[in-house]
Amino acid sequence: MSKILLVTSSPRHDSLSTAIARETAAGLAASGGTITTRDVGLAPPAHIDDAFSTAIRKAPEDRSEAEASSVRLSDELVAELLSADTLVIGTGLINFGVYSGLKAWIDNIARAGLTFKYGESGPVGLVGAKKAYVVLASGGVYSSGAASALDHATTYLKTVLGFIGIADVEVIRVEGVAYGPDAAEQALSSARGRIAELAAA
Ligand SMILES: Cc1cc2nc3c(=O)[nH]c(=O)nc-3n(C[C@H](O)[C@H](O)[C@H](O)COP(=O)(O)O)c2cc1C
Image (cartoon, rainbow, N blue to C red; front, side, top):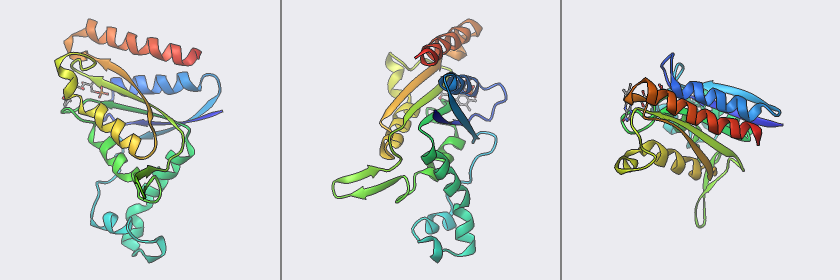
């Protein structure tokens, strides 16, 4: 039975990435699986601060109370990620990057000694074999053409997920939603087509 971690990051109540990411997780779980949901759009983790950046370099027993408290949620988020075998992330393309709540989640789960380490020949991801799906909603079209170099969300997420050991990343696009209701409907339908294939696999 697969254990799916669903991370949604849009703060919008009518978010397209959240809707399609939820459907993706449900499709993957259809043949047996559990879904743990982490909403970092409506409840974003804290930004990195001084206490956090000090704490992550110390053994737990050497941390002050403020430092220990600054990594408590991060420890929980890391445990949640490590215990999943499939990761589904939903985000909009926001100013060519990801929603800031998702960036904060990444800053909380990329932890030296827990999700990556430096080996003799460079960084080594520690999260174990997992598959990741990124549901990316965007106003414009980035899957092909001149704008594709401007989709920094995909390159960033693939880089950071690869860094912690998740090399198998599929991007499900809900793109061109700013080009009117027909284009948005077409984008949703195309994403749902892929979800149906995943659910049937
Ligand atoms: C503040 C803001 C910035 C955005 N920046 C971009 C962008 O750089 N490129 C783009 O194609 N769409 C951009 N959009 C459109 C969103 O990607 C689109 O509305 C998407 O559906 C948002 O995801 P959500 O529906 O999950 O909230 C932006 C939207 C907002 C509100």
